[in-house]
Length: 397
Image 1 (tube, rainbow, N blue to C red):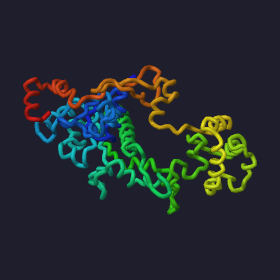
Image 2: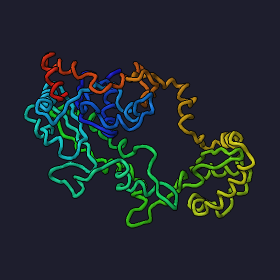
Image 3: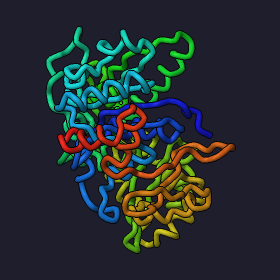
Image 4: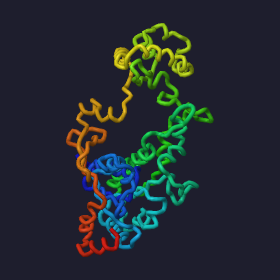
């Protein structure tokens, strides 16, 4: 199933936010043409060498794309980009510095007259609306910085020290909202034939994801406390050590589960009537005392034994896995979620994107080498071998 087959996306992208968005489009069958700098390409290619010499971030976010190298500082290369967009693109995505695409003529305003049906998605840190630029429009915006500006970092970590997320959560949030906004624009274009501009801000994407702590601190109230891997406001909810040195993650949601937890897991049914722990607010307020009771019980048990008691009590729980555990997760294997994807270093395993389609897998094309498709794409634009050679000699491709 490839619902976006026939849709062409031209993307001026780097790092994570835009590449993650366009990879979702590629998974659904869109043709994604990635513009890269001659030589080094997307700078995310150099983040590490963990995947047989390739960068882990790049392999993750760039399958099923075609790589076209253009030095957009050269007029001949910029002219080719504009031709490619006008003649072939349905969607343009870019996450260059604010204003850079507009200066090159790659903006919705500049292209609308020639292509009124073109969808342009601009991804930036703080938004790039000329009418409402805001004081932060031109600030550099990396994932960690947006995690900080959005308040996310203030909610994670320990009471003593805030902590960022271990993944690029601000980039992922922006990429997913870009993806869903583009899909909505494609649907709307089917109705009215018009393209449109999408102004996508990483700060606003993370602001949406911060809804719970934002409302928890409504009207000047105190924000949720940092609680490490535990839940800030529900208890017990988080990791607990067992007697064999392993940890079990568990969570309670209501009073029925609390009573079962006391009777079956802790084997102290009278604890359910203890006034200190009557209701979640009380348990959270007395979490240090309750934690001591739980840890002392778990210290006499292995993680497997704790898990058996939790399952018997129908208490939600999980194993605290590292990456090796995810690679080997029996549920992913049992559901047949692993496939292979090609890369310049050979095939590597990849997870299917979330969701199952009864009529086939999504598109899982290879991760491209830098400029791998340059000559083929230029041929589609009518550039002959001599023209390609001249462009290459000038360093334009």
